[in-house]
Image (cartoon, rainbow, N blue to C red; front, side, top):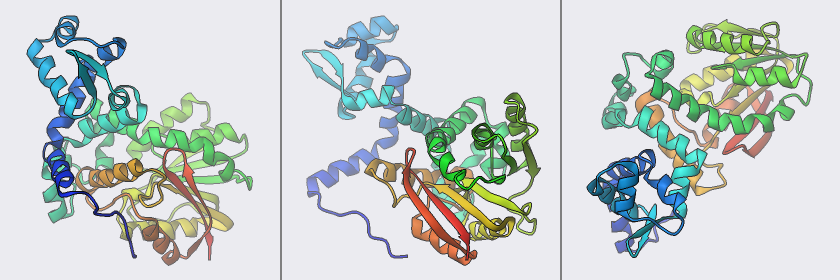
Amino acid sequence: MSVSYGEDKKSALQAKFDAQKIAFAPIMFQASLALRNLGILELIKKHRKGISIKAIAEELNLSVYGVKVLLEAGLSLELVIVNEDKYKLTKTGWYILCDELTRVNMDFTQDVNYEGMFSLEDSIKEGKPTGLKVFGDWPTVYEGLAHLPEKAKESWFAFDHYYSDYAFPEVLPLVFKNKPRRILDVGGNTGKFSIQCAKHNPDVKVTILDLPGQLNVAYENIESNGFSDRIDGHPLNLLDHDNAFPQGADIVWMSQFLDCFSQEDILQLLIRSANAINEQGRVYILETYWDDQEFEASTYSLHATSLYFTNIANGCSQMYHTEDMLALIEKAGLEVEERVSNIGVSHTLLICKKT
């Protein structure tokens, strides 16, 4: 794979300033979170003409000192501006406060990643998710997902679902354009996609392949939506590559799934997927690739998310470059028939057939 990305055209002064932003980034992140969670940004937002530190402290029952140090950090973070002792919200401050994407990412960083990331160097050296130990003793986060502390679990699922929720409505017409009757939802998690399929098409039957603990959650959601007659589950350790997928599917669907595995495991999962589809079947892969993004912010977020996989999730996967995935697809005896970019927030859909 040949990759070219970025440039180095900053002045030395700007580069040094940016280096200081990195040096203090963990502290300033916590300041941003406190400004949001303590209601300071919300109160400033309500006072469009500005509000003083003293008034904020009185309204929120906080000390003047506490509000002062946070807001002064907020000036450097460009979350607020001050004019004649009155603080106003900036555009960046508005996004920290009101933007759903930013909130989901911040909560995921704080509740799932922050404490564990102290051991990132150990994860790199050992090839294990050493940061996961702050929550429990599991080989990967997936075995422990149902047992995470409630706040961490809530933020994990909010992060996972935010991206898929925007993508699913766009991909369903593509999934059903050839009227599939049987779909394998590999790594179906809470059953969200399977349920959407059942709602979209009254004839389709879906089988979710996942760990038993995850299937138990999916079964509850399936039953509550009234689709137990058309959606079932197949408990499976997806990393047991000697255990074949159920055969004869029209579509094997994998959404935000393959990024959870090493390249070696992805290859085996793709081979098992290819073996599971019928001769006219297709393998659908919905992923976020850091090189196939419309906005620089998306690439930045995906590079950061890769380190979650390194330190918390499993120690061996990442948000991949498309060339990585295309090479594995070819090795698995598949070829890309159709590629659709800019789905939802940042997804790319690869529709693959047997070679």
